[in-house]
Image (tube, rainbow, N blue to C red; front, side):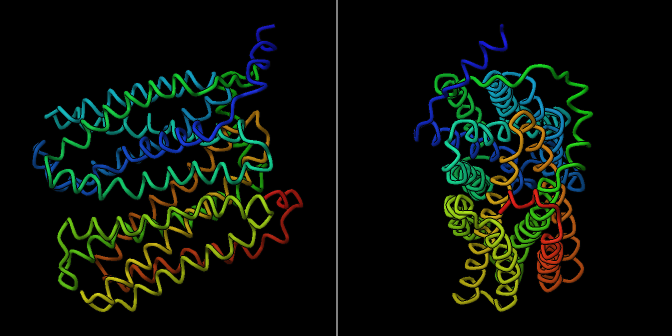
Length: 408
């Protein structure tokens, strides 16, 4: 009786443009929390008394926490009423950001930084929400608009935190985020409809099913691997380009690098366009074009010889093209996997995100090594190699099982 009542309550959710905007803004604000510390590691390590050799922990712990949340928390969307789960995670995120903004204890900061990433995984409960609300014919466009919020959050987090630290202090961005998270929780509480998953699962069974779902779902596996390579290339670029731009060839300040990063945000227009392509059955063609665009973006950077307007213009163009391609491919992937069973959508989304998150983490680690050892030519070679490998794997899709047609 209770399950029937829950299903009836979810049967006719209200789908409005206002709610879609709220979901996009919420996703952008949450994911940005994972990236705010990246350009501030020098300031934070000095303030907390951490050795410079430990500065990488400030970046990696939120990312590890986010990956943990994808695998252990996001699947709960198939078990727990989604609105309640989201509100709990956003509330905890507000608390974490407030603690980071005031603490001077290095150990506490690092523990909370991990928790910031874990609770920020609420993003991947909110993104699939739109698939339960939007009509089937508009689902790709709706997902695209919300994913725009995610990509804007990732792209804007670094320049915004850099500029705020320049104007005030490194703590300012975390204090501001805590306030925004509190306001977001109030807005979501008032506007987000309830969504009750189908009953019958337990948490241990839910986690044990992850491996079976990944192995037994070719669409999920392929789409996750495609995007792992492209997101890896994205991480290669954005890890190394600040080092390149601040080096002797360009000599840009932190503020100058922030403006280059802001220019790259123009690539965030891609998700709605990609969503329309996906709704017209053009996802496969768009995926191939996205992979080729990433290769072209890195090739363009090889032509930037110095700190001239032309050189900087080429880097900005490459950043926009790269961000555009990666954002579009994310939408193609999500549109495909969200066409799978609604009863396991939380687990499918968590697996998809965790897989390409690994690609991003590996790309970031290899990028720093390549730049230190081989300079920008090494970064260019790595950045082009990843989408080439993706293209080779993509070329085998025509021999895959027929159910892959759903991804087209």
